[in-house]
Image 1 (cartoon, one colour):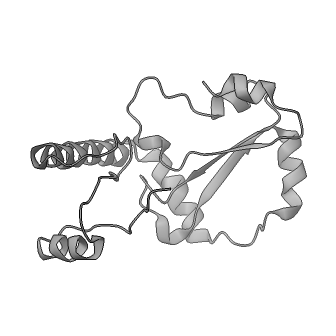
Image 2 (image 1 turned 180 degrees about the vertical axis):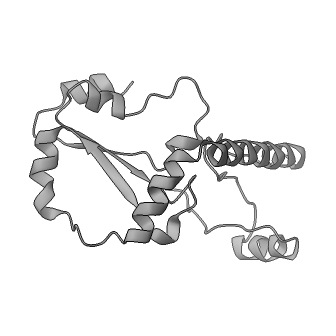
Length: 163
């Protein structure tokens, strides 16, 4: 879907594709930007993180994939001393732990179904999600809603105002 747009853009336009939630996606139509990098698109950078599905948020570990020419251009701006050894070791280990990844995906997919079924029963509008969160409409005051949900041990994130 995005490839024609990238091909049509001037060479000076750089596309940064944030795939922080890519590992959650179950939709077979999903195509990672990594495919575009592999096809030698020199104006694409794909970023990924270990903060989401790998649950390593506190270790601040992530990576970028791009054409070698782009990597060489951005390398002077990348701090090489901000990754600690524990984070690097944990990230590498998480890539080997396929069982954890499967359990995480299954757990999140099950939780997502439970929440969307509840939202359907309550007649609340929501956006379809492939991630570990669901945006849904709240009528009334959001703070009151957050407080009520907290009474039931349900965490509600911050308010996202309509644009």
